[in-house]
Amino acid sequence: MALRSPILNVMANAALKASRGLLRDFGEVEQLQVSVKGPGEFVSTADLKAERTLKAELTRARPGYGLLFEEGGAEAGSDPRHRWIVDPLDGTTNFLHGIPHFAISIALERDGEIVAGLIYDPVRDEMYSAEKGLGAFVNDRRLRVSARRQLADAVIGTGMPFGERGDHPTYLATLSAVMTATSGVRRMGAAALDLAYVAAGRFDGFWEFGLLPWDIAAGLLLVREAGGYVSDLSGGHMMMTSGDVLAANDHLHLPLAALIREALRSGGTPSRAAPPQAKAEQRRTTAR
Image: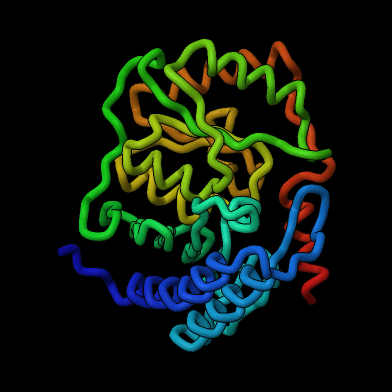
């Protein structure tokens, strides 16, 4: 059995405690109170309860660390080097529709770098975890990205814009290109789990536009520690700022990136109602 470090134990215990409430509410999903959070976005009582539990557990274990939560926004801590980045319920729409594909995502940032990440799928009881330089695991099993070398053999995950969000024609151009070149595309509705699936070799790659830090922080580290490559769509490392993510193994990352960039040149540049960082800042300001 892989031994967890003290910091991963803190993260795992917090996720397990929050997951109990999520599973109870998932069993009674039709009874949940749901309020509109934005176009096509919802926040449930389960989401808010999970966030309160995670905040209490993480703060109790590491009281000086800063916080960045999806619903609660940012809070500075007495320790300026460390910050938790947390999505208490990634896949909220799946959850609210009774689709058993959602997760808790927790990352630890130190001096601006993600050094530990944990994604927990409570329905399947799969806990993905990674620390910088120490590898990635699901429960007791070491993770490695897939070894496929040809796009034609690959299954690629993605996230699609919905409602008024995103540039639909541009996204459809990239989707068409990837559909044509690969063995299949999957849209599962939970970006954290999509990245965990890349780390586990279930997906051979993943791309999405306009994500927020809590969607991807833990998953980016998982993919890297499982031997994969992650970048923004220009090949740089501004994923946490731009929100645009491309992840794959070392054989497929470059050809997949070239395919998507060519589709973007043909179809235009992704546009958003507000850039991810602006939306995150708006939420942090509201929380204060």
